[in-house]
Amino acid sequence: MKILIQRVTEASVEVEGNIVGKIGAGVLVFVGVKCGDTPAEATWLANKLIHLRLFKDTSGKINQSLSDHQGAALIVSQFTLYADCSQGRRPSFTQAAPPEIAKQLYEQFVEEVRAGGIPVETGIFAAKMKVALINDGPITLIVEK
Image 1 (cartoon, one colour):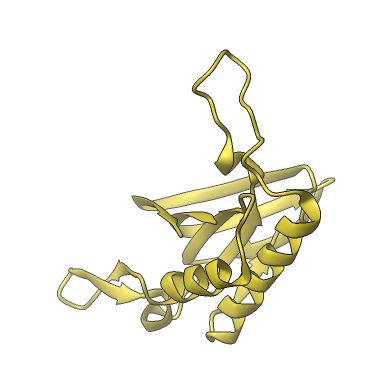
Image 2: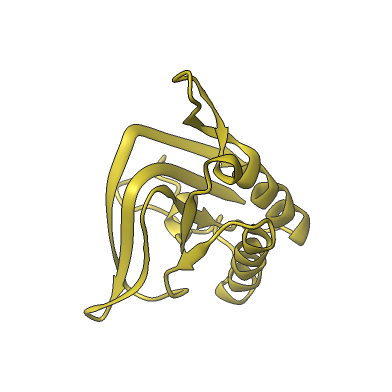
């Protein structure tokens, strides 16, 4: 599994003209699931997201986690994180897990972040989504397990 984390001052996701998820300060997280991923990867990444130091402390150092900062997470599924663009001009998505497996691991990841005390909003799995954000920093990280 792979997550792309963007620290944001606000973010939202829209499906068919309706806002389905919206947060203020926190993180926008795109989640990709690859063939062979297991629940262990979802657990590891959820724990990493909750405790990764992404926010400034009172002395201005990036030393606070999402949990410390009391920020929210907008979590969006994104199979294109496993695009292979090394050959030709059309990305290959053969590394991405089949939808039924990806959905289970995505939903597990979301629930584990919630269980860690983080307010979570989401997109809709496999929907055509419009994501809006104001990047804070900007800080963007990729974490893979």
